[in-house]
Length: 333
Image: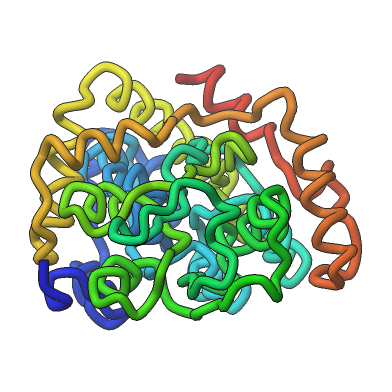
């Protein structure tokens, strides 16, 4: 695999998204749906964002009478920054980025869309024969600083193996550049996500040392700006009904879902068999809702961020988490 096959710039992401506004065919669905707000949808182009990509490509939003614009970026922390700047209304990212977004811009979580602990992993160059995180001592490790994966590796996974920050050399880069860097041997390991893990393994470039699931199931939230949910509650409920439809497709029609998302990557020049891709996609657990253990998990994450002075205060969870919209979506689904 060449570096050309693996590299995707932010400009390419945005260009790939560039269909602009996708308009729903409202037909005879009534004036109430015609008044739904147009959604500015942010998503990351790694595997965590692919359920959202499927949502936009499946026709499900149109069936719910919803219109949208899409904004693609390499990782969720960039979507969070777009939302703080009020360039995007809705977007997916993991817990730490959500807490940071709430602290910086009053973001609210309207659902946990998926758990992705199985999709995030520590990769090591295959030729190094590394099988344990502790063996990364003294190695150059690619890490996307600011991303939730980077925080979890630095604060949880590495210390659990006895590695302090001074024990390894951090090489800052986007997750989508890491397989090329591993192939070029400019880094020894990388903290990255699907489908890049599956590509690296299939091509014999690297092996998975550990995925994140033993350390963190990694809930990924659908996050909204506070203004959007207050001004457009009916749109939010219809949108979450669409997500319940998406979850049904992931469970009942996995091949249909895989075909749609696999096309996204092959059109970007990724050389990846459908079989390899389906294995990567199967590591994404799509189940929109609010897990019963969510608040204790979020409290722990927030306390860690406050301890490291990354947030000014622990969020008021009654304001930061809004299960009421999902309750209404389920009641009317």
